Length: 314
Image (cartoon, rainbow, N blue to C red; front, side, top):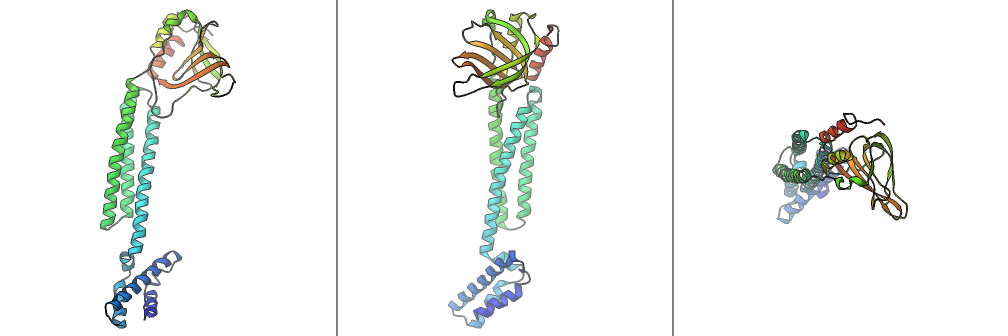
């Protein structure tokens, strides 16, 4: 009778589970019917009664997908995995976008727009994640509960992450650093506007670091004390995310120190980065720092000394 029951189930639902992908579902359905048959026999039913009860328990065409606990468990596990992975991926996307936004936020006048854009991106990711899950979880109490869990996780992660980024950003914004060499005016040989042609820092070994540049404009006609005061007024801030560092072809103002200076050889101010070149046993040591200067403040400096009234001939 068990073989007849299995054959009956296969005949009734074979068309609905004809593909190789669905063959496993049909096998699960047969096993479920046989389990019900065995249960009825143990409860004292005849073979005929157990056969009818088991076949009736299978139900209509939609029943196998609803009543099979093994299939439901597999679907539930896949959905949970999707929810977890989706939440992590969405958080990483939000993190990357927030860093990009902050890296573009050099002018403080754009700060409100940048944060509004960040909030909009977070909300968009939240809606997309919940919308996709809602499409996958069309009905059922389990589906509804999983959607609520995912929404709750999003609502906990993103505000906390947003507050963390705002806090780090505000701390960097409210604690700028100024590099002041006004006390060493007598040690400075020249002040020039330059383009970096080679900069290398070797962390290990005995090889000397490299710092080379091309002079674009000499600023010797500018009173050294005056330009040092303006350079000391530049407010450098550490960016949220990766530091900038000075690279080849960047332009800036370099201070060249006397050969008998105790430590310094060059100091380079750039809009995105700051370099200190000092003497060491292996030749020179290049400290390449990664802060940035406010765009308006830097442009005002360039207009004054490079293209403005204090501009000198190259």
